[in-house]
Length: 216
Image (tube, rainbow, N blue to C red):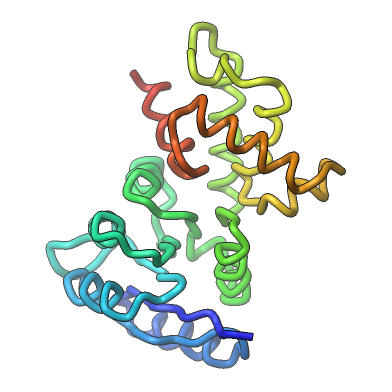
Protein backbone atom coordinates (compact mmCIF):
# COMPACT_ATOMS: atom_id res chain seq x y z
CA UNK A 1 0.00 0.00 0.00
CA UNK A 2 1.34 3.43 -0.96
CA UNK A 3 2.41 5.54 1.98
CA UNK A 4 0.73 8.87 2.72
CA UNK A 5 3.08 11.67 1.70
CA UNK A 6 3.15 14.54 4.21
CA UNK A 7 4.65 18.03 4.24
CA UNK A 8 5.10 20.14 7.39
CA UNK A 9 4.89 23.93 7.54
CA UNK A 10 6.08 24.88 11.03
CA UNK A 11 8.54 27.49 12.34
CA UNK A 12 8.93 26.03 15.85
CA UNK A 13 12.01 23.86 15.32
CA UNK A 14 11.54 21.73 18.43
CA UNK A 15 7.91 20.96 17.65
CA UNK A 16 8.76 20.30 14.00
CA UNK A 17 11.40 17.75 15.01
CA UNK A 18 8.98 16.00 17.39
CA UNK A 19 6.28 15.72 14.72
CA UNK A 20 8.80 14.53 12.11
CA UNK A 21 10.10 11.79 14.42
CA UNK A 22 6.58 10.56 15.09
CA UNK A 23 5.54 10.56 11.43
CA UNK A 24 8.74 8.84 10.33
CA UNK A 25 8.07 6.10 12.90
CA UNK A 26 4.60 5.53 11.43
CA UNK A 27 4.95 2.90 8.65
CA UNK A 28 2.23 4.26 6.37
CA UNK A 29 3.43 7.90 6.50
CA UNK A 30 6.32 9.57 4.68
CA UNK A 31 7.59 13.10 5.34
CA UNK A 32 8.65 14.58 1.99
CA UNK A 33 9.24 18.19 2.98
CA UNK A 34 9.54 20.57 5.93
CA UNK A 35 9.24 24.35 5.67
CA UNK A 36 9.56 27.19 8.19
CA UNK A 37 8.67 30.05 5.81
CA UNK A 38 5.49 30.59 3.83
CA UNK A 39 7.08 31.36 0.47
CA UNK A 40 9.26 28.23 0.59
CA UNK A 41 6.23 26.18 1.66
CA UNK A 42 4.13 27.28 -1.31
CA UNK A 43 6.79 26.47 -3.90
CA UNK A 44 7.81 23.24 -2.17
CA UNK A 45 4.27 21.91 -1.83
CA UNK A 46 3.34 22.86 -5.39
CA UNK A 47 6.50 21.14 -6.63
CA UNK A 48 6.21 17.89 -4.67
CA UNK A 49 2.39 17.49 -4.34
CA UNK A 50 2.19 15.77 -0.94
CA UNK A 51 -1.10 14.14 -0.01
CA UNK A 52 -1.44 16.21 3.16
CA UNK A 53 0.25 19.38 4.41
CA UNK A 54 0.23 20.21 8.12
CA UNK A 55 0.20 24.00 8.23
CA UNK A 56 0.92 26.29 11.18
CA UNK A 57 -0.76 29.70 10.93
CA UNK A 58 1.92 31.95 12.41
CA UNK A 59 5.04 32.01 10.22
CA UNK A 60 8.10 34.31 10.45
CA UNK A 61 7.73 36.02 7.06
CA UNK A 62 4.99 38.13 5.48
CA UNK A 63 3.11 35.06 4.24
CA UNK A 64 0.89 33.48 6.90
CA UNK A 65 -0.29 29.90 7.05
CA UNK A 66 -3.72 31.01 5.84
CA UNK A 67 -2.09 32.63 2.81
CA UNK A 68 -0.07 29.47 2.15
CA UNK A 69 -3.30 27.46 2.06
CA UNK A 70 -5.06 30.00 -0.16
CA UNK A 71 -2.25 30.17 -2.72
CA UNK A 72 -1.90 26.39 -2.87
CA UNK A 73 -5.63 26.11 -3.59
CA UNK A 74 -5.53 28.90 -6.19
CA UNK A 75 -2.74 27.13 -8.06
CA UNK A 76 -4.81 23.97 -8.36
CA UNK A 77 -2.86 21.74 -5.99
CA UNK A 78 -4.53 18.51 -4.88
CA UNK A 79 -2.73 18.63 -1.52
CA UNK A 80 -5.14 18.66 1.42
CA UNK A 81 -4.19 21.27 4.04
CA UNK A 82 -4.71 20.49 7.72
CA UNK A 83 -4.14 23.36 10.14
CA UNK A 84 -2.01 22.56 13.19
CA UNK A 85 -1.76 25.65 15.38
CA UNK A 86 -1.93 27.13 18.89
CA UNK A 87 -4.74 29.51 17.88
CA UNK A 88 -8.30 28.45 18.74
CA UNK A 89 -10.18 31.69 18.03
CA UNK A 90 -12.97 32.08 15.46
CA UNK A 91 -11.06 34.58 13.30
CA UNK A 92 -8.20 32.19 12.59
CA UNK A 93 -10.51 29.17 12.35
CA UNK A 94 -12.86 30.59 9.73
CA UNK A 95 -10.09 32.39 7.84
CA UNK A 96 -8.36 29.02 7.42
CA UNK A 97 -11.58 27.29 6.36
CA UNK A 98 -12.35 30.00 3.80
CA UNK A 99 -8.82 29.63 2.42
CA UNK A 100 -9.43 25.92 1.85
CA UNK A 101 -8.22 24.03 4.95
CA UNK A 102 -9.92 20.65 5.38
CA UNK A 103 -9.46 20.48 9.14
CA UNK A 104 -8.27 22.41 12.18
CA UNK A 105 -6.25 20.94 15.05
CA UNK A 106 -5.22 22.99 18.11
CA UNK A 107 -1.81 21.88 19.36
CA UNK A 108 -2.67 22.22 23.05
CA UNK A 109 -5.73 19.99 22.59
CA UNK A 110 -4.01 17.22 20.61
CA UNK A 111 -1.33 14.66 21.34
CA UNK A 112 1.13 13.71 18.62
CA UNK A 113 -0.75 10.41 18.01
CA UNK A 114 -3.88 12.55 17.54
CA UNK A 115 -2.05 14.32 14.71
CA UNK A 116 -1.35 11.00 13.01
CA UNK A 117 -5.01 10.03 13.34
CA UNK A 118 -6.08 13.39 11.90
CA UNK A 119 -3.88 12.83 8.82
CA UNK A 120 -5.56 9.46 8.26
CA UNK A 121 -9.00 11.03 8.67
CA UNK A 122 -8.17 13.60 5.98
CA UNK A 123 -7.20 10.80 3.59
CA UNK A 124 -10.45 9.00 4.45
CA UNK A 125 -12.46 12.09 3.51
CA UNK A 126 -13.03 13.51 6.97
CA UNK A 127 -12.63 17.05 8.32
CA UNK A 128 -10.75 16.53 11.61
CA UNK A 129 -11.29 19.16 14.26
CA UNK A 130 -10.07 19.52 17.84
CA UNK A 131 -12.81 18.75 20.35
CA UNK A 132 -13.28 22.39 21.39
CA UNK A 133 -13.39 23.56 17.77
CA UNK A 134 -15.90 20.86 16.82
CA UNK A 135 -18.17 21.79 19.73
CA UNK A 136 -18.11 25.44 18.72
CA UNK A 137 -18.94 24.64 15.10
CA UNK A 138 -21.73 22.32 16.18
CA UNK A 139 -23.13 25.10 18.37
CA UNK A 140 -23.06 27.45 15.37
CA UNK A 141 -25.08 25.00 13.30
CA UNK A 142 -27.66 24.50 16.02
CA UNK A 143 -28.14 28.26 16.35
CA UNK A 144 -28.44 28.68 12.58
CA UNK A 145 -30.94 25.85 12.23
CA UNK A 146 -33.25 27.70 14.64
CA UNK A 147 -32.80 31.12 13.05
CA UNK A 148 -35.96 32.23 11.21
CA UNK A 149 -35.39 33.58 7.75
CA UNK A 150 -31.96 32.01 7.25
CA UNK A 151 -32.62 30.88 3.64
CA UNK A 152 -29.93 28.29 3.11
CA UNK A 153 -30.21 26.50 6.44
CA UNK A 154 -34.01 26.65 6.42
CA UNK A 155 -33.94 24.90 3.05
CA UNK A 156 -32.28 21.82 4.55
CA UNK A 157 -34.32 18.85 5.71
CA UNK A 158 -34.08 17.56 9.28
CA UNK A 159 -32.06 14.58 8.07
CA UNK A 160 -29.68 16.81 6.14
CA UNK A 161 -29.19 19.04 9.18
CA UNK A 162 -28.54 15.97 11.32
CA UNK A 163 -25.89 14.68 8.92
CA UNK A 164 -24.34 18.14 8.61
CA UNK A 165 -24.04 18.35 12.40
CA UNK A 166 -22.34 14.95 12.56
CA UNK A 167 -19.93 15.89 9.76
CA UNK A 168 -19.17 19.17 11.53
CA UNK A 169 -17.70 17.23 14.47
CA UNK A 170 -15.04 15.86 12.11
CA UNK A 171 -16.53 12.44 11.39
CA UNK A 172 -15.96 10.88 7.99
CA UNK A 173 -18.85 10.02 5.69
CA UNK A 174 -18.27 6.34 6.43
CA UNK A 175 -18.33 6.94 10.20
CA UNK A 176 -21.56 8.96 9.96
CA UNK A 177 -23.20 6.13 8.02
CA UNK A 178 -22.14 3.63 10.69
CA UNK A 179 -23.31 5.81 13.59
CA UNK A 180 -26.69 6.55 12.00
CA UNK A 181 -27.13 2.95 10.80
CA UNK A 182 -27.70 3.97 7.20
CA UNK A 183 -25.77 3.21 4.03
CA UNK A 184 -22.70 5.12 2.89
CA UNK A 185 -24.49 5.90 -0.39
CA UNK A 186 -27.43 7.44 1.50
CA UNK A 187 -25.13 9.77 3.43
CA UNK A 188 -23.33 10.76 0.23
CA UNK A 189 -26.67 11.52 -1.43
CA UNK A 190 -27.67 13.77 1.47
CA UNK A 191 -24.26 15.46 1.33
CA UNK A 192 -24.62 16.26 -2.36
CA UNK A 193 -28.12 17.68 -1.79
CA UNK A 194 -26.88 19.82 1.11
CA UNK A 195 -23.93 21.22 -0.78
CA UNK A 196 -26.14 22.00 -3.78
CA UNK A 197 -28.61 23.92 -1.59
CA UNK A 198 -25.79 25.76 0.18
CA UNK A 199 -24.02 26.39 -3.15
CA UNK A 200 -20.72 24.95 -1.94
CA UNK A 201 -18.55 21.96 -2.85
CA UNK A 202 -17.32 20.70 0.51
CA UNK A 203 -18.00 20.65 4.24
CA UNK A 204 -15.41 23.31 5.03
CA UNK A 205 -16.91 25.62 2.42
CA UNK A 206 -20.29 25.04 4.05
CA UNK A 207 -18.90 25.90 7.49
CA UNK A 208 -17.41 29.15 6.26
CA UNK A 209 -20.43 30.09 4.12
CA UNK A 210 -22.94 29.55 6.91
CA UNK A 211 -20.75 31.50 9.32
CA UNK A 212 -20.61 34.43 6.87
CA UNK A 213 -24.37 34.39 6.39
CA UNK A 214 -24.94 34.36 10.14
CA UNK A 215 -22.87 37.54 10.47
CA UNK A 216 -24.54 39.35 7.56
